[in-house]
Length: 418
Image (cartoon, rainbow, N blue to C red; front, side, top):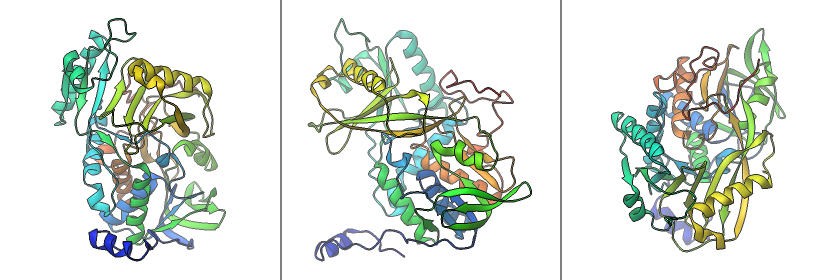
């Protein structure tokens, strides 16, 4: 059991050179487990934690091919919100935001939740009507939000471009005050520590190379550290979902793309909220260190690299300067990429696969990080009970074949061809 973090421990370790004990156990793989989770990112670790916490299932292994937090959980823009419109998505992401709000206390680990609020901007009367409709949907589901006119946005965000000749005039916006940001690394570390404390084995540098089969059923995994048998095997590998599923002979309706994120040199506090640009997919906040953290669309080609292309860098910078002209004077400090698993309708999968014993959590598109707690909560329920959680029952693998798409954005990300 790891030491409980509190003010006394902080004072004690300050006197001893900050020699803190290891946050989670470095486990060696055993021969078999009740559940093996492939992927040591936010979703895999959250699933392991809630299996132990909610269902008392502790004979669990999380196998990660690299180190904990090396994937998308450490490669995103840290935004959390629940301003969704589709039935099912609205309730799911609100549950996730509620879990975020108590997560630091739950894990005894500061995930640095900052509920600074998010404003989605409207750049025309029709777009403002769309935001009003979304706001009505949110309020009918018990989720607070405020529709702002142009004056309300100007009062809240005075540093945006309101000039008469600006390319994208601002007509108003939708504000969710409970939205904000979370420290992404702390999420991975906190869930890893919490799961390890409850008996879960976290096995790093252990790449899955294949599946162990008994007829059609999956009964374990082959890894670079040996064979591990499992009562149930769970995939939670984000942009590598198609690659891992292909080892079991499954072809998923998923494409992998790179999504770049950026941070500027640090400046004094300026952007007090999370802002979403309505003229193009662009979002920005400011970190505690002072850097502006922002991102845009995926790069428009399939890839498994974690380095994006310069045309998308240019497009995102244009969005930044169009929204905040003063940012043109800043230098870009760094940028990085995460591998997005894009689905036809922009919504994810949390479900059993056609192969007995094999389960899938993937296809999160742009929304994987903010979904982390609810994803782990509902995936753990599925693995523990064999039944879909009511909040995730609509995230089925065959929905696009049945015409039951959950198209939150009004258009598919791509068309899957048989």
